[in-house]
Length: 179
Image (cartoon, rainbow, N blue to C red; front, side, top):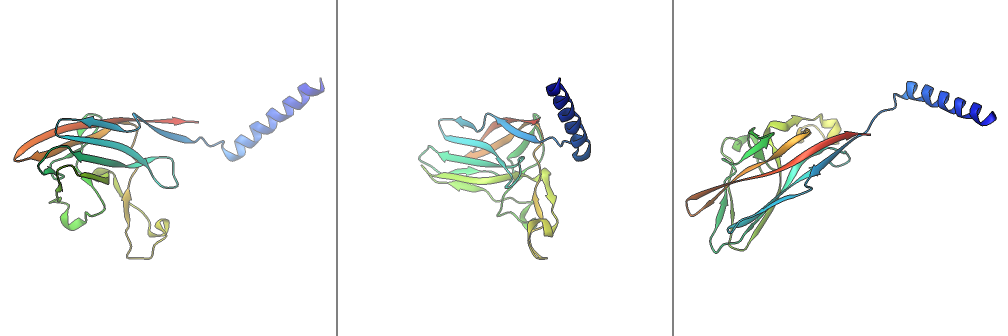
């Protein structure tokens, strides 16, 4: 009888504690697959969602590319597109991009046998961050990569090889579970 009373008291205390603290749930982001890679006769390319530092959500992608030919390949960022749930939803940006060149994104030329790796962010998900949240003084960067929501996400990658345009889709599925 005493143990039933103790269990009852414990459950009552747990109920009260949850009422006071709200028993917050934690969201956990995951990607399937963790990294999506594609391989053609011309190149290998990969896309992996990256978690924001100190957080649990994805806010950008690691893009990797390897030229398997004996001639230069050009990644056309101006015509490559962010894919969200099967639809084109703007372009990608990366650290070297400023508001001055958003309308004319530079291409990346990848030499024969060379590799390229860069963090890319969907332009549509870029958002304002308070300077204080970045730990910076006024005049510092005030924009950051936003949360990539649940769903299918990827890139319509456009590669140019000697004037020939090669479009390829690379996609992952992001899920969010509450615990």
